[in-house]
Length: 244
Ligand code: ATP
Ligand code: BTN
Image 1 (cartoon, protein in one colour):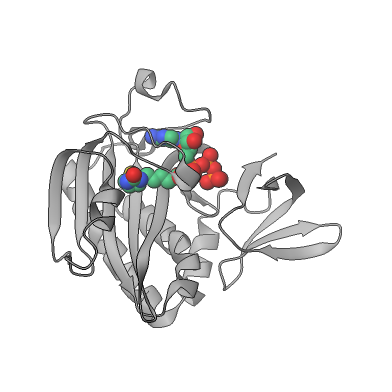
Image 2: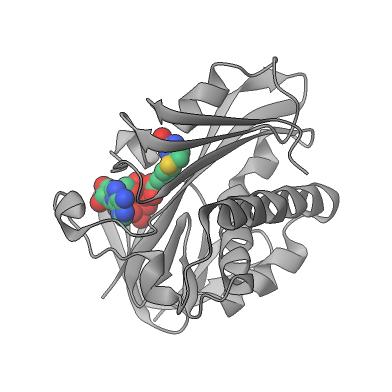
């Protein structure tokens, strides 16, 4: 499905590669690398990207509905990745709002959606994913949270080409569906996979912390947090969720 795939062994960041080429690439164009010298996460955080062991993949997408629709994208992409991994035999893959994949309460993968600009209404987006496949313990020492590898979730690890092709196809389909029908169908799929459903969590918003019970997402992709005051929807990029 992917109209163009750049396979680049060593790169600064697969997201940056596509961001630098927006306008010169067809929708759905992908970049796949073996090693990133400057892999990044949300808000300028580092994404550890050692050689050979993991997967670093980005796709360019032009969203004609505009930037407002981009809010739900990392949720849609999370569902696409989790379902792709399930289809390849991984069991127990979960999503964490708004942009991570978990396995057994540890971070397995991260999603980074970045915008390069707008043409009229349309938003030019780059969607990146980093999936740990077999990262040695020693390479991940600098990660200050619990993390894991796909090897833990699979009896037999799919080969790299199958994994990349499955992810690309699922991602392309999910983005096309989202464009056509919005978040509606995805919210149900996301809630099935929610790592924190009905569990106590806290939301970190700058200096503010709110504790409650996570109740999944609504049809806009907002996280639902139940406290003594009732259920409040939270939407927006500057919120981090932590288990209690
Ligand atoms: P948030 O809930 O705000 O998304 P986060 O800590 O997951 O919080 P991100 O920006 O999503 O933050 O991801 C970057 C973080 O992920 C890094 O600060 C580091 O803790 C962790 N990290 C970096 N590289 C890896 C990796 N290869 N595997 C797992 N975790 C990583
Ligand atoms: C996160 O959890 O904050 C998101 C991490 C996203 C990492 C991927 S790896 C491929 C793409 N290129 C990058 O520089 N970042 C994303």
